[in-house]
Length: 451
Image (cartoon, rainbow, N blue to C red; front, side, top):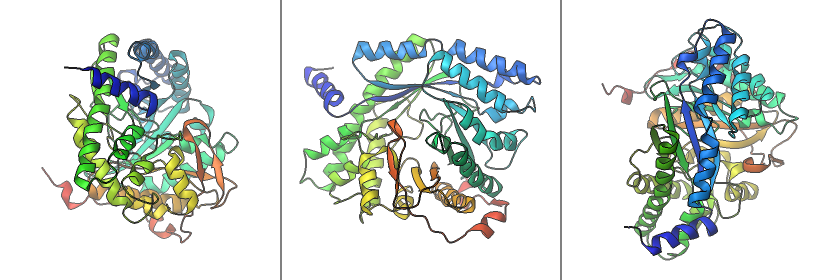
């Protein structure tokens, strides 16, 4: 039974502690839009998205007003476009234009799925789409892109890893006068989930329904506020408090997902439990870790604190929703988290420490600005390292790094809005070029043999 205390507590979470629904994301299958005629295929893509998502933004806004719950983004994810474009063998940029036009027509913030899944090799259309990513992101406004280059089941496609280092660098060059939006909307995955509602890595997996509603919740400020009330508690009580708080946060997400699903007449997919920070004060994952007892995020003990947080969030959230999926846990995007920004500025948080943290968090090296002259092979090495962590640990890892053209480590770059500001983080200049250029595939680990 809902009581007055629960209602007042939720109102306080929204007003004082930055609780929000970060995104309602509609997943749409475009498999039936494949056609040998690329012009006809693009028309099908545009028409289907406009039909399926015509009421998405309006419904989200109505729920927001009716329940008083902030819903920050309304988004769309689609079938990886490399799968759709393979039938036409045409220029994939035409799909990017059609997707961007459809996103603007229905009014969503972003559309994800200009993507390819190449963990075991390149199928027809994959490499062509990947090579078009820099221009696609530079010439559109709302399109996001992702490439899955490895998995626990298949190993790591090192040819794709080598290519993606060049693609990230080219994306930065093409958008250096546009706030480097290219690489900020490009994610390289290992073990990419099919039902992730968060950008920039969202896409609608081939095994997903025709159309589905996925919701991503957030609330780092709520967790931090809960921990601030138990300053002398032991670690067991800290974990229990995070668990209980995650349950409350996720119940709000479950409510929004259920109502949106019903009103749009689209099946409810999952709630993603992730604690997604923003640059706003009081909305930081790093500050949660510091509330646990660290002087500064990046100090010795940071990885242990993050492991506790990630596990407790999942344990609490999974009890609050009928279906949990996506990434689910704690995000650590440097430029999007006020505490991470401060820690990086002070020198407490280094890229090597961030890599260690990615072994226990939800995603990976996210929204990290690196020197603009970083060689493509070094970026590929960063991608390979993250993919190895994901492959061996049977978890999702990702890389979204921003080569800050014209800037060196120690300087800063401001992205603005949700992307925030980031110190340029120092990266080892020792070259992995020979290793990266060997090509081939890192074999799947022994734990992949579970059949």
